[in-house]
Image (cartoon, rainbow, N blue to C red):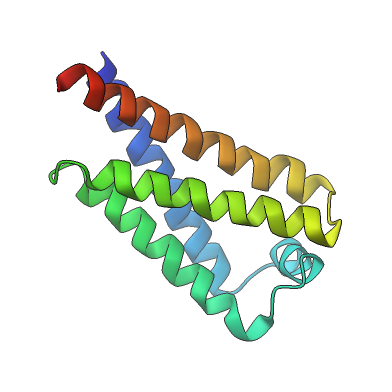
Length: 123
């Protein structure tokens, strides 16, 4: 049961991140507003796309490579902890913070937690 849950959560998080990558290639207004709201330089927006693309790839690759999904999920948790920090420092605490930022932190945290539980029960 835990193995199936970890697989589906991992693939769901990878799909959400991949969707975010596609969305970020030509960011709609709400994405631009968020990045500008936390004062993230536009010249560096491409870095976020690369990070999310690598994370999604690591999550998917982890289906076949032991430990890779856990490492990728932990990286995604750190990424969204940095995003939370950026929002708090900038005082940009609108719906993008509460729904998107904290929502993604929760999803990545639950995924990482389930992956840790799976490793602990298997080892």
